Length: 505
Image 1: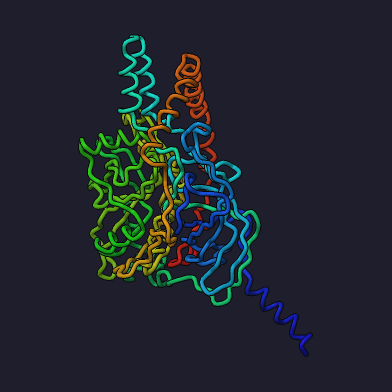
Image 2: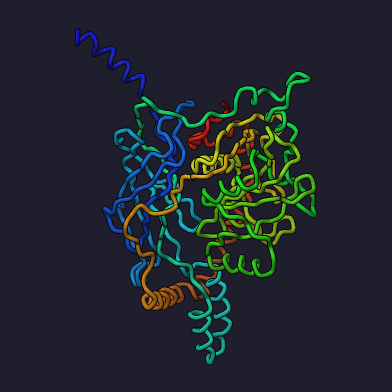
């Protein structure tokens, strides 16, 4: 009898197993700090999964699962005598869903949601060279002119050591920093008792936009009537694609974004413009940096939110416009979300602007997943918009690819948001050396850089490299644009929200 039940029990067990194939992404948010200055091999790490892992529309691992790992290797700058840059190797090898057993992981770090550091193909985090900042490099040319006068050595030292600010070369990620892991081996999880979170919009609210005459208005019909593109003021060029629709009050939107760690962009004035230029030159963050103006039906955005990284060159951001329509008595807001990934210069009359990520759907999903993780979202769904172009360009010429869907987010009062911005560790982690050591480090790094790079040979190499890189980018731009124009551009389906069904539901 027992032997006859074994195949049945084994079959039931296999039916409850769900697989995440190799290559699936895990979006995590650190709940413990880590940095190159104080980290050491074997130091434990902890993070939380901020979006479920899906496979074929089914949840394999739910959001809120705890991800653990260790520091494999950390190399700090210290006094700058041995290293000019810092580096770290982090490994995350286990995940524990709520109420479940610990599941082994095989992952590789794919990306850090920060502006300065880079992640190489092996998953190692590479820090910046402090003397490679625009501010210090420009000061090098100024000092080269000053040094033509042999009596100007004091002015040279003052400019180099007291006026020019250097970015912090040590790597440091506070709790709340976000990372992307990629599975290097398949992951299997028991789906028994697993829930996908609150339901999406009711079917009656998701009927096709071409509803019979006399049928009550629904969000799908409303979305079809919303403006598709924002425009640039002055030139009137078509700009960002609208891709998010909020249902909720201004207070609910503000509460949700604040709980998710976003900040409102400040209005542009002379003081903030100067601060932005300085942050650009010194490779620093600017959490509330102004955003360029865009118009929707001739009106500027009512709200602008951003999640700044540790370099002003990159940020997540979204512009939101209040609409005249309401849904079930709730105000409707249409928004355009894009991800700034680098600076761009001298384009369409703009001396300095940002270049955006081509796949704008990734930022659309990022906004929804961030808000849903806070528990400030009651419902989420994706609405088809056939009239939206799947490939186009923004006002500064950047290509944009989309699956043409709009994300609908229905908010709640956000009275008890879920936060992960504070460390679970009982002890703090030093970010960098003390003041006196930083002075010594600065002198060592600047002297070392000047000996290697302040000469006509390196300046010529630097200028030639910049020119060649610019020419290669120009030559590759057209083929890359044609490749992206393929209609088979997937959304980031590996980042579903705990409060949403899989995209396309």
